[in-house]
Image (cartoon, rainbow, N blue to C red):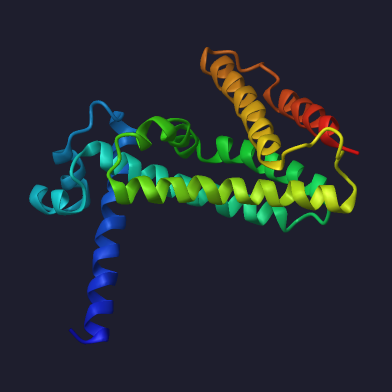
Length: 211
């Protein structure tokens, strides 16, 4: 097979893959994951049901594809956030703020990532590897910022013994507070001070690791 032909076929395959995920995102948003069928996705994507199964073995595999998209979107946000600050401490704060904006601006993606660890156990080898790499890439950005903070003196070496554990602590703590905001506002409490709580959380988290 000639290289141009191979490349064109790869592009067509990728375009079809993206079309399926676009359709699934739309239908999941409108009907919910549980009420959506493979037929619904195929119809929305203007593809045959048989062709849909060439790309994804079931609805769960499509959902994992969306989780990968969510991971890539968050990675781009973290990468852009790091570039806005010079010190390690400022970079970590910028990434934390971008995580909250990710929740506000892409709530479906945020929810998808919340379920990603459980979904990874059911993924085939290729998808599981992709999801693991996506998670590792996000962690690498946070760990890199922490290591920079230790080098530039903005972070406390006495408190940070392990940059990886510190990154997990920071993301886990912020994620928990965001889930609290989500629950409170989801229960019809529009006056809940979500933005203020997030700012307070970021202040507390950064002060806990600052020099």
